Image (tube, rainbow, N blue to C red; front, side):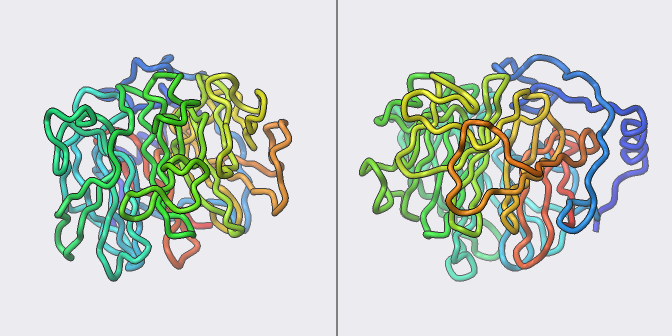
Length: 391
């Protein structure tokens, strides 16, 4: 299993000793990916790491799965213990061998260059991957299979399906196209739900009017069949499942089949939302725990982006683990039981933070199938890693 170079370990130790967080702008990584978006605001105030809760179920670092990744965005574990990883800028798809080790390039998509938050974003394996070898990807396109250069959607975000033959990915097929794209606010998380349908988190493409517009795919959570067609039972007869979102970043389900989603706020009021079919989540009229008309307030709110900028989430034993970019920490949020309705307080009891400032920006987190373990994806440019976290 890869280990950290001595210089990197020493540097991390020094940072921890100084109590620095190194927190940067919320939506994109530092250096080559520094952002001029609404999240770019320079460094957050430096704080000493808070004492962390310990005990059963509390996350603790136990090793490194892989390192030397370049601007990774999403983790897609599969049942054999391996995982696929997307690289946002290069458009490469990597495979991590079972149990960890050197990442191997196994696929490539052609992504639009010059964006700050677009590129190759979400990955998700088919629920029947062991039989069909299908991997789904969300990316910002230029042109590609099934889309001509003259098509107005050519530079939009899309979801494609690729086939894994045991050595490489190929046979790219577009299943959803025309998702609005911009330099920022591209959403990108995709996850199969317990109902066997694919859920797609999108952003408002920096155009606020898209989020409440039911004819637009921007600022929504979409629900589609594996072939990309609108899933049966959708509330509006289209691919739209919920609306009024600003920039959805994480999707996960609890043991009761409820969908939870993380979402960036506008420099304040980052959100963890309980998603229901057909509901309006308020953007751009309100954010956080505020209501407007029949909009649904967030279940949990981080008032400051410096504490969160929540990206990928995982739910294990009805606890949400939320990886954070600008906040450079992992939040552990116990979820309420059946019958819960967000009450407008923006709080849930028992939330704790972990690893603040220890590993830099955290982009995604995924449970390891069949184990009491998370893989945690860092977002540190060419020095990004996957960390092994026991629960």
